[in-house]
Length: 461
Image (cartoon, rainbow, N blue to C red; front, side, top):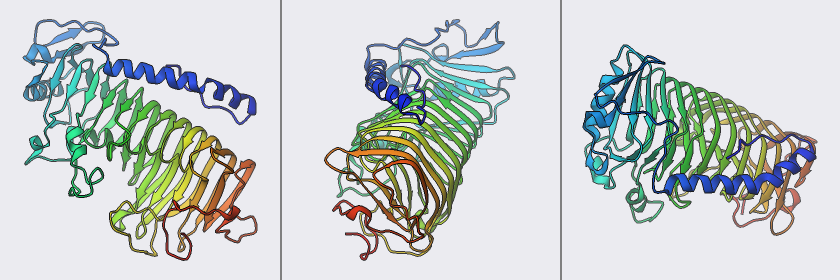
């Protein structure tokens, strides 16, 4: 799959980008599906097994630990959890850089497992084969239901791929309250969690069918992830692709996500995040939030999303906050983005309510300030292509829209603003609803849709 280069603001650049879109998209999907569902897996680099528990690479002085040499079965049936855990302990205690190898061609059944730090030296985990989770949720009885593969307190950790991490989450999805409202709302594991890790690298990793979120970074610093692929059905509940929480200095690039929830979500106290060259679809788009749930405080700032293709998603680029929260979302830029058949392409929703019962109207809210949308083009699945639904108590400030061209597939696209203030520049289609005279326009273009997000009864129908 060729690297996606962000298009410039010029019409010629966008035209070239548009014409190459289908080629890039279908080639990428075919490659991903071939890798994921093919009969075998060829690692990027075939590392020989020494036949001994450890082996040292003469070039890098890295100690190699092949889990097969420690007795792993790799048949997808036998429980290899203890073997993987033991290998981690040995590698983590090595005074020389260590590399753990999950060999190609085999499937390793691994139950919930912790990979604790700190380690004595740098550790690399190379997943050339397949790691599979238990299918039965009962395996987690008495364990932390939030975790499957859990890395915590590790510095200078590298996770690299060529193989597959399969959460086998189908039974978890079936018992979700989002799948069946008669089910109780319960938690499910995140496939791979990195907690309090520093100087972390994740590259060329493929994750499929996670029980809930696929990959989460929580309380981490200095994260670089590239070449990550996530695949799950569009109706799989809460299966975010990459989730960032209370994490700083993050770089995500060349990422492809098709899933049942946000392709990328950013929450908590997260900052200095750069996201580049993303393919998202299906899914719920690229989201800041949700923020402020349970009247909690959140602070997300200094985020740039530069270069993305979104197709057949329920949202495009989104900021979502609950009423009653506090804190802020500020200095956030979405730019150079192409959308195809996307519902709610540009949306700020300060009345977010992902609850089976109506949410209470509350005056406290997360403050939204200095948000930019630049060079965003494509087609909207909904009439409301631009939805800026801000708080009555603390309106959105310093919004900036530049060169936004969004067409509705079934007519003339509309924009809708509520307590949204800022400026626009360049070509705007649909026309901007941000007022130029300081007065809020709450029904620009006579926008009226039965699918509008609910606020208090005087503003939305």
